[in-house]
Image 1: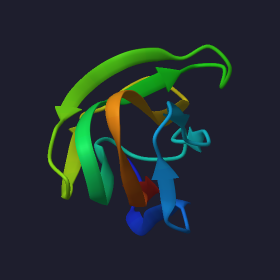
Image 2: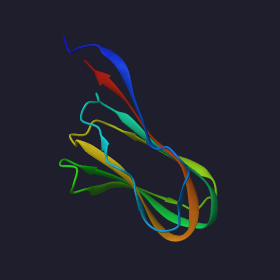
Image 3: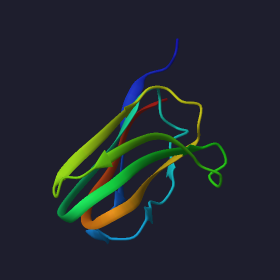
Image 4: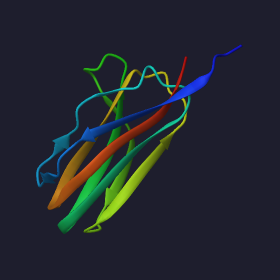
Length: 116
């Protein structure tokens, strides 16, 4: 048998409101202990003249990251979620490339399932 799904993995990547008006990189999120798909959600508000790119980046070593998905945002307030199918990577992170403007990052969440 493949084991029993018995835990939900939740990580709040940022715990306080984080103003972003220059490029931003989150801490690394260890995803090696999850089973199958997972989500990363970014919630932001208080934007002014927003034109930014949200990047979902993956790494096998936690040092060298590659951009896998990009989402352009122009709203003053919003949320974006990536639903990620199985990946062989061990780490991920969220980066924000500021083309113009500013936002307040309210939260970045990682949600997955863990198999024992």
